[in-house]
Amino acid sequence: MADHHIEASQVGCQEAALVGWRLLLEGGSALDAVQMAVESLENNPLYNAGTGSTLNRVGEIQMDASIMEGSSLAAGAVAAIDRIRNPIRLARKVLDRGREVLLVREGALSFARKVGIELCANGELIVEHQRQRWERKHGTVGCAAVDQLGRSAAATSTGGLFDALPGRVGDSALIGCGTYANCFGAVSCTGIGEAIIRTVLAKTAMGELQAGYHPLVAVQRALAVLVRGTHSEAGLIIVDRKGRVGYAHNTSHMPVCWLSNDGQWGLDI
Image (cartoon, rainbow, N blue to C red; front, side):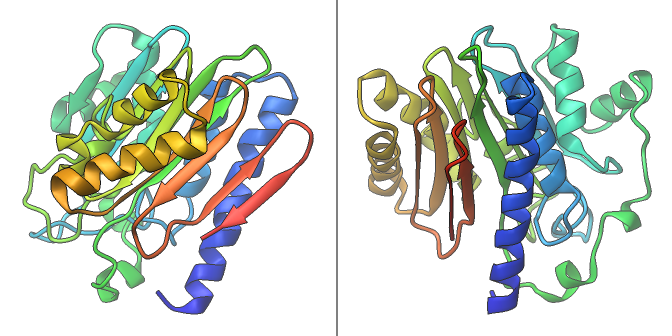
């Protein structure tokens, strides 16, 4: 990725984190905060999610997203969808309905119409750099947060894997794989979806957190499980119920921004 793209992606990452952080400062919930942060990233054409999603093998958009609230274990997800500007918003509607957890393809789009989410033309979601920059083969956006009441939540959204088979679903739509939250904290993952699924990476990281490891150690231990088992690439972010943050990756780039309730923040690629 060219340097100017890295710098721009850092700015977009920081902007999204600020959206969620400001909501939390106003007393908002972690669930709303992660949704708003991910929507910000979905609206940024630099990221492979929402507007800017990559194309599958037959040149179509195919997006996945999931969201989970830790104290209630409420979750919602959508997979293999198109014509939706903000997949995470639709996943949230699934969560709010409180019955199903995962809806796919036309069933998810039918549900979107019923709950008042407007469909758009796929051409509005495809940006030129995704037509030309074939080296950007995968990517995901995600957020994890804990609010003033100690409730945690995580949200993950992706435009999928470049050149993927139609109907392929990665980790981002699967609770426990790309997204997980409970009373101990919240996790969001990115990378090679099949490897993340095989190692149930988000839940693996949460298990390390529940075992008493600091978030910085928990993510390293979980990533090591993935590397040992699959020799693949991934990255993940985690926040515990105390607001402590950890992240790790063995990918070439993974922009990360975090903010605390005392105004401290950090930015990394």
